[in-house]
Amino acid sequence: MTSWFARAWPWLLCLSLVLTTTSTAFAEDKVDRLAQQLKSSDDFRVRTQAALALGATKDKRAIDPLCTGLEDDSTTVRAAAAAALGKLKKGGVECLETRLKKESSSSVKSVIKKSIKKIKKALKKAGGSITADTKFYVALEIKNSSDLSDSVVKSEVRDGLTKKLGKLDGFAVAPDGEKLSDAKKLLKKHKSVDGFYLMAKAKLTYSGGTMKVKLSVSVFTYPNKALKGSFSVTVGFPDVEEDDKGAQKELLGEAGRSAAEKFADNADRFK
Image (cartoon, rainbow, N blue to C red; front, side, top):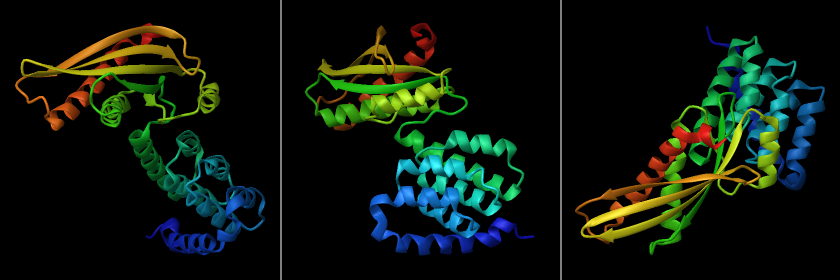
């Protein structure tokens, strides 16, 4: 038998398209207006429209009203709010997980689970978000002391660190360029999570056919940035050409991955 949500979903999508095409004139206050509709409209169809439209805004401000929408009395609205968070992909995992524990509708549960997967995948790619399993929240700053371009060094080292930490249980990586004020607000809500700031300085050298990258890492608390210690890792490739761009990128990434592993093994000591 076709589930209620499967039958209703095409209609929900139509509502979303209608609202999106008519909201351009109110672009300046769109999120606030939609949030108010989701919160206070007496018509569940209007609340549903508002939730879906919030998911299409690409605005992080939509997370809070959508999380509130998960508590709506209407199954349709709860499903729309969950789907909208999955479309937005900017956060809301915690409120989705909280709702999942008490949700009675199997259709809404299915939407919540799908949205959680989408958001976690997107956040890991861009820099993770705190969940119920997070123990350490890590912000990164990459410095370049090599002759290579800053963009290559910073991109490859950060990518190595982020992907490795993102795969480790209990670790979440802060978005690149996160404001300290945002970090303070986030960690204030999660007092059991320890924040760290890693400043990693990369130096690539070449001698005797061997290419090496040394990554010197200073460990600070986050967001207060009190120095807690330091460590370094060195990785190398033998028998490569000095101008081998592919080897340079791979080695920088490997240095990031190695630093992530070493930090993870010693994170409790830096607390």
